[in-house]
Length: 504
Image (cartoon, rainbow, N blue to C red; front, side, top):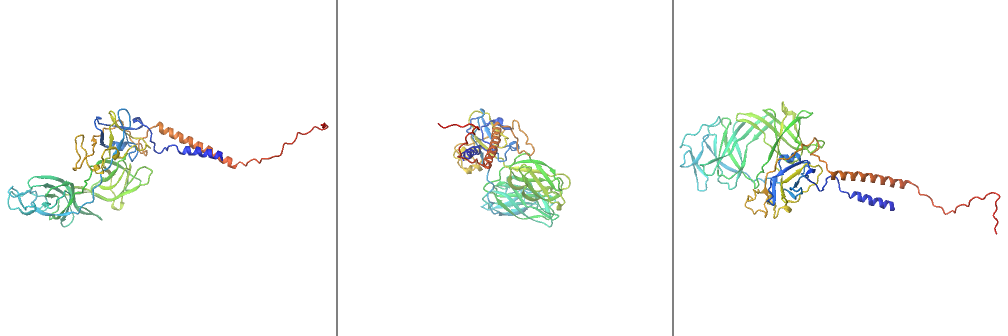
């Protein structure tokens, strides 16, 4: 029993060794394959920057666990990953706007200012349009002579980010739309230069795009003109989509070349990066192509594929120009490998290989600028444990609402009119990596030699060997039969024949 207790104590000590799956040890910039300078002068208490595409190409861990920030003395600094901005809030119900037809190309103005005269009431609503005075209307396109429209949105008290159009026409249509906005019917600004609208049938597929999306606008009047529409097309009605409380964040885009898989209609893409993509666009190789596709992704070359979305993609030549399918929204996936499978019943994609375009919202990092510059972002170390802390622990008086606001710089103020944190992070732009290393195939990141990791692996191997030896000893002891003890005194030595010891 004493031997067993001793072996159990040794085993408990071995199990207490730190794991080698992800190591958290004292490290330096030399332990990381990639480094990028952070252009901060050291006068700011907190520095904030967005991760560039090169960082996503060089990190070894999809969750960014291998990020580190060092100062000029080589000291690791506390940092936090800034929360990603929340997605758009639930959309409000669309609101109908009044549609007034105008001669093609004509710009409506207030009464007394020339052009097409518009009369409004005290609330700003359009009550009458006079097209019989003023200069002759501009020549229109190949469509109806009434190819321009004034939209009265004066009843809306919130910004608008989209218009839904109800087009009346016999048969299919497609065209380009130009949208302008005005506050006074005198000065007009371009909102959208050439949005595509369409409603066409291609084989068994019906493709529709009747919404025009744009950055949120607060304008009482809109002017819409289209080109390339068939004869007789008219705008029967329109509705405005009020802007969400939170607008869409800015995204980065990358273009990835593909290769054909073994099966027809199977295409593979290697991004050689960890982009947290939430938008996908498939660029078709040939015009006049319509095809249902399925989009998959996976983190490793040997992992199973995950279905992200199904979509009908198209690329069509129309009188108003080429029209293509919009980007597809997917659940954010920081996967390296992507796959597009085309339904061959649609005829496939013809010759050539499609391209994949991915978009993502760059993650932001904020750190405490302790010590002297230069400051360095290091990344590219496999099996590293995250050293990030909570953003609320790093930024004094931080609130969750701060994640959706922008901090401009040392003298900047957050947008939205809310109070700023006690210490505002200074925004900088991350420099180019000093020595980026491409990700090797299937490695998931740049691997670097670490004495700490090597020591832990050696300890593990030695521990496994010791455990095997103890198991062998225990098994041998358990199968060895115990010796039976005896109390029989030893036999006297044999006496020599003929020799007798007389007792005195």
